[in-house]
Image 1: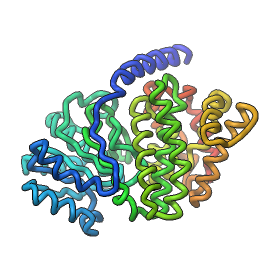
Image 2 (image 1 turned 60 degrees about the vertical axis):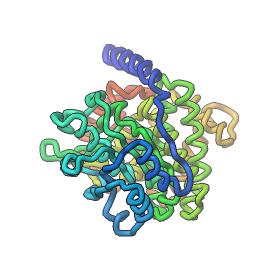
Image 3 (image 1 turned 90 degrees about the vertical axis):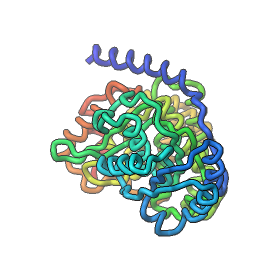
Image 4 (image 1 turned 30 degrees about the vertical axis):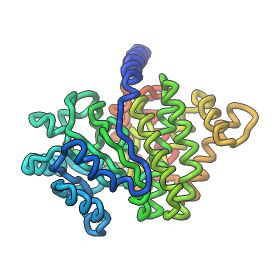
Length: 401
């Protein structure tokens, strides 16, 4: 085991050095109410005249995109809508989008939606630049390695941070079972991100809470992982503070435009942070649980985050104390501050009526969940502690209904 830990840590350290060199990858960022309406002029400036718009049927049905489409029409930009994206998108949706992109000879991809839409759009772009490589062949780290077509990412939830990340999560069927896994490559970072709070106003309070807790988990895990650079630490702390400030506001009042903008910024910062320092066991377990039980990803993270933090114990107390100080939670000792930080997360989660346990979680699935989580996390994620199956089991027992 000691030999494995040494190998894992060496690999993680080397990878962190590489990622720190790419932290300042240039990305166009548009952040303001109605920022999405600036896109037609940007398309024209970049001489893009044929676009594949990846979104959901709901956005098309509600007419949310009408003003944008009218603007594109005025600029003589052809937009073909692909809306066959469901929550937890599967590979077939990516393949359909890829075929349509080829058919219309598109020059760019515009993704407007939640994390599922943005992730699917990234993988459509990956298939465009790697037409002979399947999505399963891209699974893991740095398997794409080619420049995607121009990708414009417009999130309609403040959670995944996919508009800033190098990751795309897909649901596949492996050995007859649903399986979530990530494709990770720096070329997946969209070259343009648009943070328009008006597109998030209609988000229901429950989904607002789930996605917000997902953003909080991104920031927390990136901060707690080893080898975080100063810029990652600063982005994580700012994201945590903005999340604690804005998420209760938008949960109570979804039309609070300034708080919606702040949540989008928090999600964006958290996306930057975990792109450059990864997530950890919260996400690894959540991916396994989500695939097996069809639990929304943000909700699974909200339940698991405090349980994982408690399982880490004293090794993360100093960093939790830093976050507690940033939030002015009080406390005299490091351990007291750490406990107040975890309690604050639990209190915020409870205020959103998110349960503290996972329904339908069965001990019969513990071994499979642990196998999947450990395969995802080790050896890549620079987690505070490197766990074995027993530690995963302990977390699952903490959240057992």
